Amino acid sequence: MLKPPFTHETALQKVQLAEDAWNSRDPERVAMAYSPDSEWRNRAEFLRGREAIRAFLARKWAKELDYRLKKTLWTHGEDRIAVTFEYEWHDAAGQWHRSYGNELWEFDSEGLMRRRLASINDAEIAEAERRLR
Image (cartoon, rainbow, N blue to C red; front, side, top):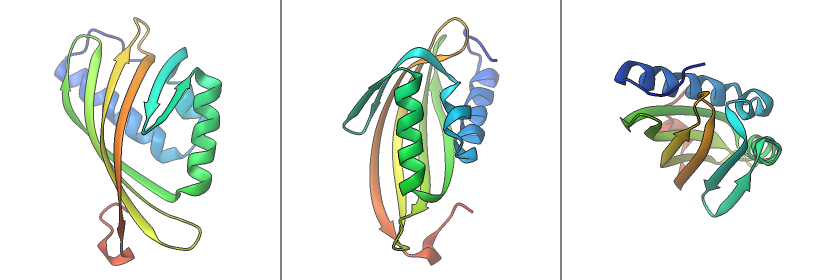
């Protein structure tokens, strides 16, 4: 596990690890990257702890089908990383969406994320407009 303090190289690696985990769409795998008492703000939803995160992710990926994500490092500090992201998904009716946003991450000394603040906007797209496959 990559631990703070982060260098540019280790911050890039941490972002790639997060992208890979989220693209697995495995709530258990993703939840293990967060501290047991991790705090989240995801849109207007506030979560605390791995169990709440795991349940949130299971609900998310049951709704956001064929989810595909790309994260990009924006900046970093000793124990913080900021990313921009976009992801694409479709709903049960087949309508595709692209979701854009920013995340602010704060890590504990073991490299687990203890805080995640996410701001996200959604746009409907045609399947032909997809960029992430």
